[in-house]
Length: 241
Image: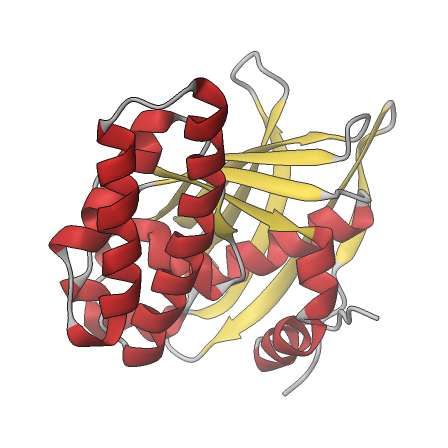
């Protein structure tokens, strides 16, 4: 496979945010272009788009880069409906957009990428090393309820922990203890997602409501072999050292 080196440049002469563009090859659709530009919505956000050879958009991700605080935030990610069916999953448009955002993280020295995942996309983002990062009490409760309602033998230990936490929450403990239980829930949810993915049981273990998630630069570096293999798979000449 011929490798393509991503073009990395400032979004504009007076804008120091670094963005990338590259092409990948799809056996059915031909040469696919992935590029990022300013999203003209008045909030100084960016949009990454994947387009086919005739310019039709196949997927998009809207996000922001805050270089001052070394943060990114993802607002919206979507693959066009006709490319979401199980028969078309090998297109991997979501994966390609995620690789583009990984490059943006590294080139802008971002420490953490935060997203609010749709309930149906939690497992997708988890595959690319995002982990639960809920802060709101109601989000915490929804995750715990999700684990309890989806209980199976292989997650029995986590189900018991979730039931115990919900019981403690029902007693209306002080705010400091409530916040501690949020952190505990994130840990339980991370372990739960890992087990579900190992068993490929995502369809049988849905989440209730959206889930705050995060990807840290530290995790990207720790999993560099995983990401580098994906860059290589798509013919993208980029490597995490």
